[in-house]
Image 1: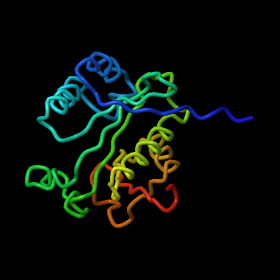
Image 2: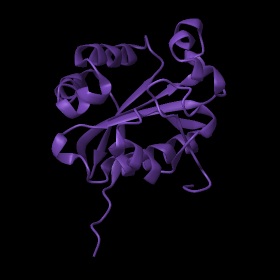
Image 3: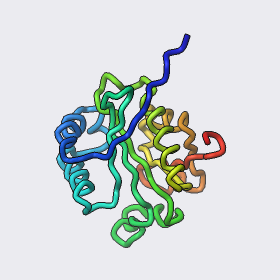
Image 4: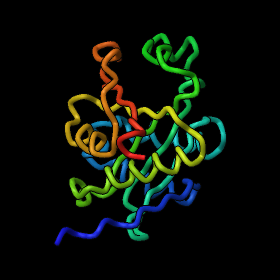
Length: 177
């Protein structure tokens, strides 16, 4: 009998979550794909304080904090400073949102939590009215790419090779609605 799928929940990140996120962000599996943990925690702090429009969340599995997920607005990044480094942003509709996530504790990797959380998050976003949803993993992060494919994301062929070190994938609602 296959294991039961966990009940996934989401809560907005608040100031009390910063120490937990800081611990997670300092782990090797996180730093490999997200970069400098001090810089990343400053970004999350800016989100909480309203200086960044990105919406950050902690996701839970059966009530236990297991990861971080956020969504950001493509249209807010279609400006000269972002487009200079990421011209592919200008090729997407302004109403598109991007999603990023990471599992917190390393011992929770490769257990299906990323796929489950992403699928539940996308369902919540669609219920909220968002229809164009992308994710942009590093193409070498094969674990993430596989998880995102399982959650219904597919590579956008016309952006392949045009997005620097990111693989731009779009959620295909017809497959997972």
